[in-house]
Figure 1 (spheres, rainbow, N blue to C red):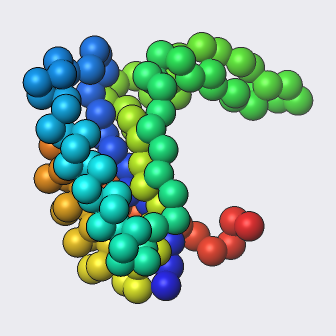
Figure 2: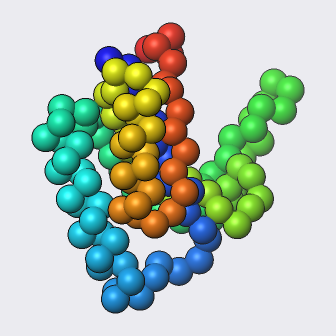
Length: 116
């Protein structure tokens, strides 16, 4: 099994109204249970809005600290899952389910095994 990151590409702005958001959150909760039941669950998390980010950028022998997201854009990572999957096809299958549940684009990326 390998770990894969399924990141949610979320548009900036306010959350949708409850009549839109509630069914999405219900579908996401069902997906989370399905991932757990399949033994693919590692963890998931939502992120605060991109404007709450702080960027640390090396500058010579110092580090420049700035407010706001690393990249300017209309979409940022809004949350993610880390899953165990036997291969990319299995990870993509979970990514498809995530995209349908959350109604936003999902980026699927393998996590390198050399980082820990």
